[in-house]
Image 1 (tube, rainbow, N blue to C red):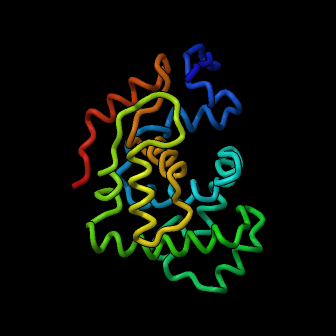
Image 2 (image 1 turned 90 degrees about the vertical axis):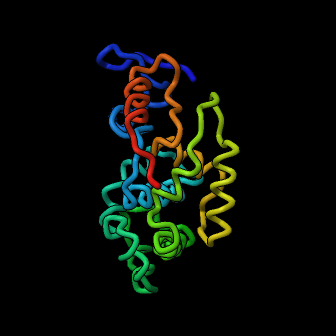
Length: 196
């Protein structure tokens, strides 16, 4: 992965050169380890919505998604019904894709089951932590994560979606060699207590 020189002169992963919003997301969120269940649920859902679209589209609509989906409180989203689906299909602030909306509600219900079975989403997801291995779209860990999520009834969680989720939530440090944020992420990961 290549780097580019940001506005402050520091090198960053080349993908975040497209927009200042990407740079802020890259510098403060992408790759930093997350153990908060609501943030994990939000991200896996947003990665599902991104399928076939650009992350820029989703990032620009993220606050609208949060408002539409009760802050991604999966216990609340699990209670959504047909009236909520109809409401969301009319919400121009989000991606109005029926299957993805219904998948988010389904996944909220599966998340409730997972917390009951595993103690937390974090305890489950962090079992799939991986080592960086260069530029790729999937990994053996993301394929295993995707397979297990689908076995448990989750939707829109293919291996590529699972890998993008792992990159973003810090389950792998895929910042480019030479990226100024790579060492920051490595330090956070080193001090991070893996959920049990």
